[in-house]
Image 1: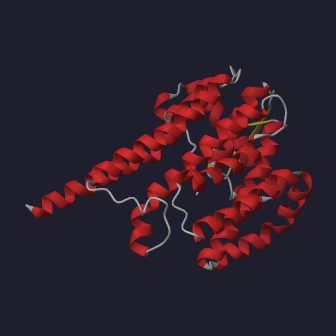
Image 2: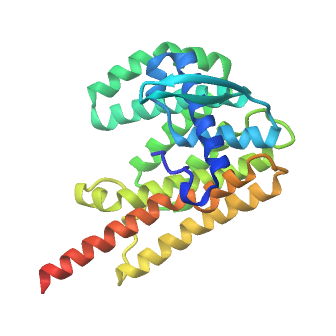
Image 3: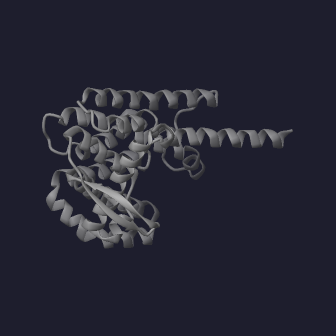
Length: 286
């Protein structure tokens, strides 16, 4: 479900690109340190955003490490690691474990069940250290299963479950920034859920699987597309408002790049894909 919180590299200057990559590599190295090579397999850009956000908000200093990456063996890579990196790495594992368990229930994928077993000890270790966050994710999976099983049609309700869970993940320290962090991540979580549903709509309709957008019957397809775009825009608008209320100066350009541009990368890709498919159909019809 995740994988939408990314940067738009074309709109970042070189220094910001290098900084973002260093945090990404830092998260990768922290996952390896905490959970071994299997942890590195769980690496994603969503948690990199969390690292940069918390680093900027709390103005954390980082330790710099040079390492050799198997994917880029010809030159040394740079990793930036701090407290937020360690926290995000642990949250990365928890979210990945629950995602694997959810997929196992839905798809009966034995490779994913095997991966769950491999991560079991790490999951139990993190559960003891971060019981609030783990309980929130477990509660979220249960409530989401119930809502989807009941074919919940209220978009605000179903998407809000992801937003609430994200609030517990982003609320690292439960301090004076909790309210704004929870607000930011609530709307970001809703955007993620709705974007995922939007991307999967045609596939879910074909397979007759639940999708919160299925019940929306429009006279014209363009009406639905307009509605979806406005809904997604509304979610990110509220998310951005919360971000702008936070006193973040460090890496603010990277964070704005993600919130104002990067999160739309998949949407724009889907629009281009639909356009090409339509053009292909038009050529066939001639």
